[in-house]
Amino acid sequence: MRPGATADWSCSCATPARVLTQIAKVDGSVGWVVMIGSFASLILGRTPRRLFDHLRGGPDITVAGAAAPGGTAEVFDGGYRVRGVGRSPAV
Image (cartoon, rainbow, N blue to C red; front, top):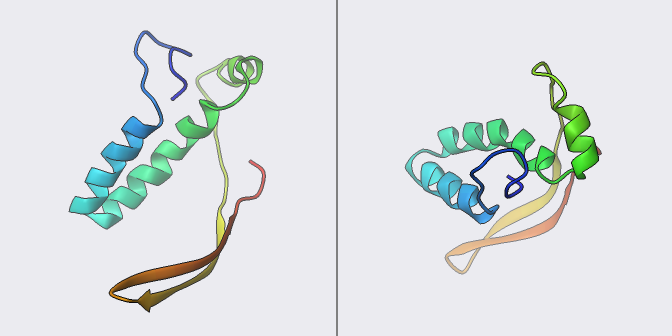
């Protein structure tokens, strides 16, 4: 997702976020799967160029990670109040 990093086309991070939002509005489960599947490109697109070039040295790379959201969501005035923090271990 880094503009111009590896191809002739590029986009900002906002573009895939908008696409993902529209997918999730139609089907939340599909949105979740698309988000999980696209997370690697978001991470790799934000790595320093030297590391990115090293990682993409071959077609057989795997990117893995985990998220550990912590907090609560409560119904509040017709909506939700979310409290807490997201914690993600280093990838």
